[in-house]
Structures are given as structure tokens and as C-alpha cells.
Length: 397
Length: 102
Image (cartoon, rainbow over all chains, first blue to last red; front, side, top):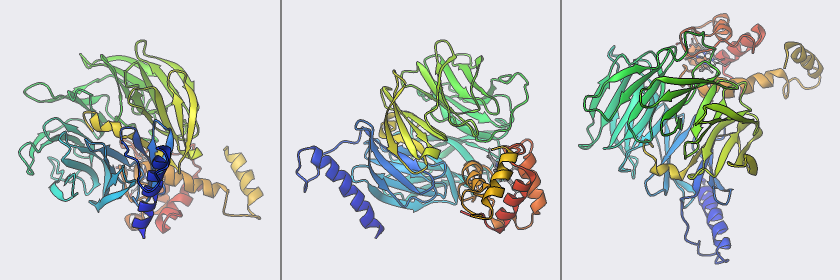
């Protein structure tokens, strides 16, 4: 029954393309996936398949479980998307056929994942029972299960997982305050490298676009845990102590995300945790360059693909505003209100347009980036994450 | 909505429709969406622990309400006083223990 519904939406999407290609309705026209993407509909367990050139939704794919906080990665060929759901569901979506291709329930509670550089392994980081599960990207069969037992022997939530070159994954252990690298370079049994005492409660982590610097945000500590992955003897160091200058932190109503952080040639723009500020960090020295005052507590700091601007959304209750930071001057140059409950922002690969989800208005707004004007609107049910297939070719995935 | 406005609104709404559109409905949305960002939309847990009846069985409504109002210092659990009244917090705690409405 379900399957028919998926096929139905697949056909609908196919038909849409076919009619555009000149009305050979029986035979769907050949299509490409480079302009496709997904919008996560967090409350209804569905995703919208979208086309970011046509600025249109092509179909809704349902039955993905609890998608609060859900994110996705893409296969190197850009045909498949792997969606990580809150309920531990790992779903492989076929973007060409607009349907669920495979789905496994891998653990009680997951938060995010990554795909290896060769596209063969999908790793999922879990909250409960903690640890990282690794799957074959084609079959979704389990390849390895790596528990996250900290030095104290207790299971830890795992967060901030990204892929590194050489079939490696790096992630943080929230409860234990550790960072691990799982290296699958020799096959299914990972070689683990562990960094202890990295700081209290690392809540998220990410790697720079050259896969050189991994940073984990620390909750209730002034600074970040940092590993330079280009040096031969890896070590984890605390950077940015004093970022907050000893000021009292505000309560955090939504944890900031490091995914999509604002990176330009020289600077990294990070959401401060517990302050109405974006932190500009010098990538050469890892020192603080500027604390940029913002409208609220930043959640996502997303760099325009050329790194010239960083677009920022904010935590509840100030989540109806987006601000634009000019990177050369490190100043907020524009503020606007795309709709209530802004959850996520995604640039098209060359940065000419941006898609912004306004959860509480059940819509996604498409804007012309240079003119900063809305050009289209897509109806979506409680939309959160917007993920374009072009992510397949970014390091870290 | 200010507390005064909320009270007036509740009074106006009560006799006619006690459910839809009342501040309680707003609270349900807030818990699902905004508490849900840490505790999961289904409250099965995330960065914060599960807030399901089984998980909260041994805990008092008053104790949970106090956590909601004042947070847990040193952890991401923020204080909601200012956003939520003590009555709101007690109602949420009670409903969490019973099984939170959709």
C-alpha cells in the first residue's frame, strides 16, 4: 500500500518531467539530479523532493518516521539521499524515482550522519544508546557498530560526525568529553584514535571545507576543541578561551549548529552558544578576531558559497529574522523577516539563490541572493532542513 | 502574549471552546516544537533525556515544574521562567507524566 503511494509520487514527478520534455507521457524523459534536493517536513515524517532550478516541489515522500532534527547526505552520483531520522531510522531515497528505496531502523535515537569519501559507507551517530553505526551504502546492511564508551566506561551520546578523507569519520562524545576518529581504511574493522579531556559537553562539531580543522563546540565552556588534521601527530587543543570575555551566558533555547558554518578564505564564523553573537575566528591562528553582535542567539551561520557573506538565523523566540554578515568587514549589513520560525538556510551551489524554511508559516521562501528579494515560495508542512544533492561533492558530508 | 492578555483570552474562550486556540493549545505547540528541539518531537529524548511517562515515573510534578522554570545549571536545560508561568510549568509537568497531548 505504502509502496504504491511512493510509486505514485514517483510517477507524478516523472510525468511532470515528461510533459515538459514534449509530451511523451508513457516514457519519462531522462533526468538529472544535480538540481534536486529534499525539504524535511519534521512533524509529518515526510520529505519534499524539490528542483532548485525550476524552484518547484516535485513530490512528497512519506513514511520516514520522526524527522525532528533530521538531516541527510547524498551519494557521490547524486542519485540517492540518506536521511537520518530522530527515531533511529536510516532511509535511502531514490531521487530519480522519488521514492523510498530502503529503510532500516538502526538504533533508538539518532542525530546525524556522514558518508565516506568513497561513497561506500554511511555512518550514523546516535544519542541512545550512543555510539556510531556504520552501514553499507548500497544494501544498508550493518558493517560495524562502534560503541562510544568514554574513559569512565559509560556510554556517551555521539554528535558532530563528519567524514574525513580515507574512509574515516570523526565525531564527538557529548557526555564523556572526547573526540574519536574511526578509520575504515583497511576494511570493516575500524582503527580508533581517541582524544580525551577535550572539554565539557561537546554539543556539535564540523570540519572546514578542506577537511583540515575539526572543531567541536563546548557547552558551558569558553571556547572550542580543535584538531588540526594536517599535522602528523594529531592532538586536540582548546582554542578561543576568552571568546566570551568572562561575560555571563544567556540560557540557550536552541542549541547552535556548526553544520554549514561560515567559512571564507581566512575566517571561520561560528554561532556563539549563549550569546547574541557570531564569533569570527582567524583560521591561521585560531584566535578570536571579532565578536559580531547579532539579533539573537545564532543557530546556523551559513556561508554563501564564495564566502563573501554569511547568513544567520536565530533561536526561539527571535526566530523570525535572518541577518546577513559581510565577511570582509565582519559587520551585519542586512536584516529581514522571511517568515515565522526560520529553521534552516541552503544556498544553491553557486550562491545565486537561497532557500529558507519558515516552519511556522508552512513554507519555504526562495530568494535572489544579490537582490535580497523573494522570488518564489514553496508550500511545505512544518519545514526544517533543506538539503541539496550538490552536497554530495562537499568534503565532510 | 502577556500573562494578562493570556488570562483574558482564556476567560473569553473558556465557556465556548475550551480546547482549540486556548493558551493550553499554545503550550502543546511550544512543548512539541521548542522543547522538542532538545527532547525530540516525540519526547523520546535527544540531547536532553526522554520526557515520557515511564522515564518520569519516579519524579514529582513539583520537582519537574521547578526544573522547567529554573533549568539545570551547567547543562543545556534552560530556565523557562519569564516565558512560562508557574501554573504553565505545573500543567506541562503533569501532562508529561500522564503522556503529553499531540
